[in-house]
Image (cartoon, rainbow, N blue to C red; front, top):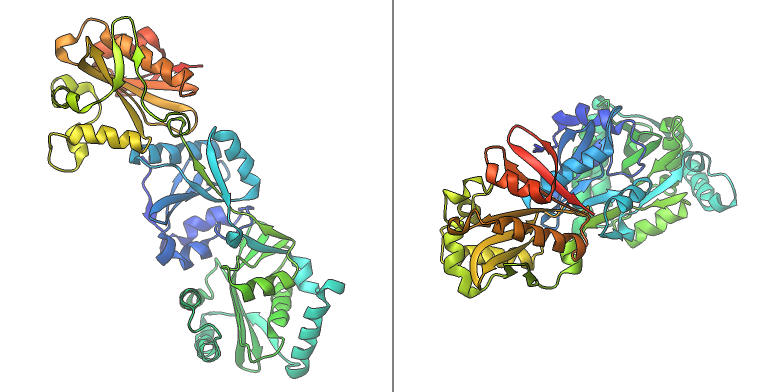
Length: 467
């Protein structure tokens, strides 16, 4: 299973190995964003299939960045690793801030998926040349502001900031806060707090920090990071008391540090009206979308209630209150369940009550995580068949167990085949898979009789049935 660890400054070299050549072009695929917004997103990372994987916390759940491949990275294998990890944790594999260039890949991957593209998430992306030269009629306003600034500060200049500029940076923050126009905006204040922390990294090799000086006084500063062909501006602040300083600083920063980048990303507008107006006035080449993909399983899309299935000898139907005693006996038969592969008692996370296992089955179906069928002979519960572990790619796992008093009569094969057919033809799955311990010859024979073997490892034989 994947092992994620929190992003820290010590991880910067490892993350930059992936981000430095990443051409996704949006700010989330950068070291600066991961470090700056740690208190909010609690980003954690690992590497799988040669790709950087990031897990974030959002609205009480997990969301994953799209994998960032290294030189030999396999994006499909990395996505499969995320899906397997989420499946093991009982969570949906939500892939967020997906760049435009990767959206078609996910649309082809997931049969059922909810996709959102929130306007306030979009980054403002500009051609470097546009910000460097402000050429053409549409930039006449910016040029007028720059002329006013130059009339007041003809000798202002931009240069790189280093660790030695700490006193100048500290004074800048004092001056900036004294005239900060959003002192009652909690979100803006939090962003300012994080920006101050990030500027302490001026001089680190991962970032480009630059400032505009009026004599010895620092009057504007920015922190940027190059990712692929895009220069991402993480922080951009200036003293409002200097008329025209923002367009002047934007232009000079692009000239000094834009290099051969194609794009400059000035990040999103955080739904701030003034910020949105300002960023639009600079004529972005595009508002880069960030899609959120929420895959959905077939159980959620096609099944309103667990049906009744009929075989030659058996009836398979939903569990009922009357089944609780027999169901508890089935679940608590430890000797019989040693090959079940799941500890029902430990899975409760608390003491066993009379209704515990029944309520777990009810809850799992309500959340469309599983469909539990009672296997009945002459109306009496003699076993259980469960369709679960929906992978959101057209597949689900099937398990079956029969009470010891009814074993050896082929009831497991009969029930298993019925639920597999239901999953493939009614739930509209494309694949039903199963596994059994290598020592469990009875299960091996049952699965081999109705499914195709498709692999093994040290512990299990694996089987599948396709349509």
